[in-house]
Length: 93
Image (cartoon, rainbow, N blue to C red; front, side, top):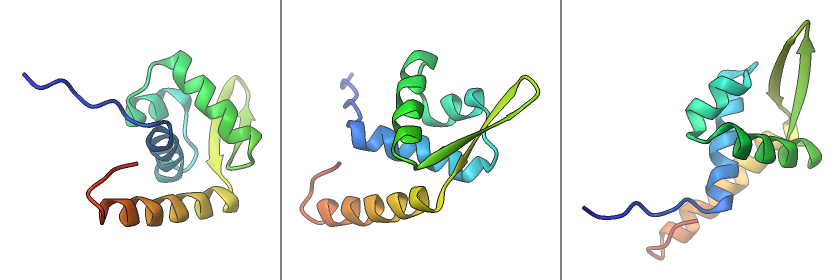
């Protein structure tokens, strides 16, 4: 059995922010399922994305939802472009 290759930090950022974008008002549980991350690691990545203004948090009652910002949409587009560029050389982000 071949060991699975670990995802890079950039790939995880892309997975998390894409989950937020796809889910619209994304709950943390839905994001962690979509991005395949444990809760403690997800919290770290969400904090980083919030700090950089790529996502925002909305609180309703006891619920927390994450939304993508226009800056986050641009981040996804640029990172996807970089991924395609690097893939052209047979490498991955």
